[in-house]
Amino acid sequence: MSENRKLAAILVADVVGYSRLAGADEERTLARLRGVRSDVIDPAIAAHRGRVVKRTGDGIILEFRSVVDAVRCAVEVQGAMVERNAGVGRERRIEYRVGIHIGDVVEENDGDLMGDGVNIAARLQSIAAPGAICLSEDAYRQVKGRVEVAFSDLGLTELKNIAEPVRVYLLRIGEPPSSTRAQTPASDSFAPPRLSMVVLPFANIGGGPEQEHFVDGVTESLTTDLSRIRGALVIARNTAFVYKGKGFDARTIGRELNVRYVLEGSLQRSGGRMRVNVQLIDAEAGAHIWAERFDKPVADLFDMQDEIVGRLASALNAQFLAAEARRAERAANPDSMDLYFQGLVWLAKGQVPEQLAQARSFFDRALAADPGNIDALIGSAGVDATEGANTAANPLARFAAAEAKLTKALSVVPDHPIGHTWLALVEIWTRRAPQGVARCTHVLEVDRNLAPAHFLMGYGKLFVDRAAETEAHIAEALRLSPRDPGLYVWLFTLGVAKAALGSYDEAIASFQRSIEANRNFPHAHFFLASGLAQLDRLDDARAAVKAGLSLNPAYTMSRDRALWTWASGDSTFAGRLDPYFEGLRKAGAPE
Image (cartoon, rainbow, N blue to C red; front, side, top):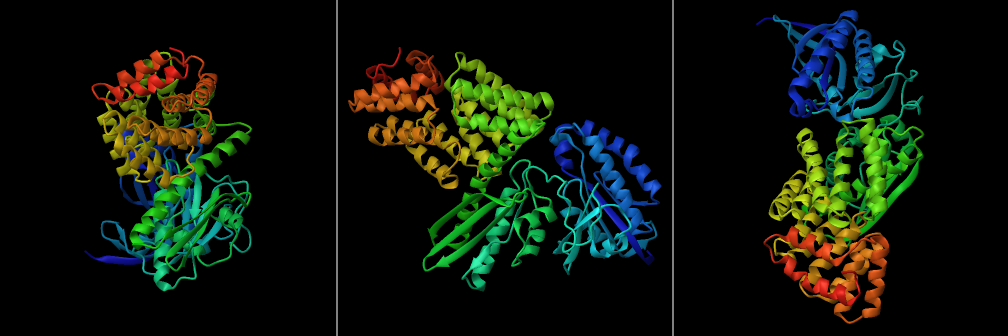
């Protein structure tokens, strides 16, 4: 086949999350894509004199006579998609990534294009954020000052399978033009996406070249693990490493990359110990949100890297959600996701009826604003499951409601880790503890750092007559997330396991730690009362019962026993709780 070399402006576009969209509803997704093609893409291509080189189902390769035409076409399409996605839930939006490059290509007889010109455009597309456009430096030079859009210089960036780094420019729609990083940063009016972040290369303090690879590996692995946080936008490793060893402040980096959060850290080796320091920074305000430091003995470097990354990823997951919730509280006109984050805050506060009612209210408002908000649906199911296990007069109805919502949510997002975790809790409480434990195993295959799943596996072991194994699972959850909002439940469960094994001193210590972590959990007070009564500390036991009843005045031992007995099914766990109820009776709990 003969060939013809020429210079061409190449645009490559691809649908973000096409497999997820098609998996959820293939027929509807294809229909929507056909509509976008006929209403938006094809007219824009014709208007800007483009040629379709190839369609790939969820993507397209276009050729233009000039880069200016290519950029104007991309801007028109991305602007139209913003309008089409207005009011559409995050899980159902059709968004494109776009890459543009001008370079040498080979045109074959059938019109197909090959060569680095196409390859670089494709790699630029792959690193673009949803709804964004990435240009090579060659393309940027052709459009600089000729189109009314803003550019951010991302610096030299390594692109997969491209020999030399390429200077990349990020194009944002609807902002006044700027030139380079040193002159005019992106406009502050362009709001960064929720849960958007960059992990800057960790500093190697006092270490030699052999430690540099280890430190870079921690940064890269942490970037990968944080990308698993649902809804997170994490800047790619290649772009983040442009800032390595440079003195840009967090606010500048946040503006350039359009992210809300910057994570920076350092590793220092001294003798036989490794010290890790991390800081999470609000990129808009330049203020520190969270900082952590921990030391550990130097061991196998790969094991150390896994432990450091696991602990940081789990802790940061909770910190990001808490930070988003604080932002949501300040929102003048909260949208569905703002309401969802506020619901999470109330669900984490405790398990008394008033707090759960507040959480339910926020999740319901989030669903009213966007019925397709899967996270809010799962949050609402979490309230149902929590009420069933703690405060509901009809717990089975609450568990059934939770399972129905979770089944619906998981039909749309099959691998949602939090959805599966809540469903595991429902299974454990409805005589399907083995299935619940197995589900936790699946969750940890998807996200090995999800501390609540480690805890829940230990919780499920109580119901399958393996209480002696509970402590190890909870210890792993505590290692990963020592300040987790769910800490009080984990410590409570450890106390239940110790009480079931007859270790009342250890049980009491765990219940007391649970109460110190969160005083709004009635069961911790009742179990503490029972343990104290078993050791004949009756005055303290009665005080604990009083504290529990102040949180849940409707509590009765008969209702509590019925629920634990029913949930235990054929296991012997219910029998292990006989001393618990004997202790409560001695402490004066209502029958």
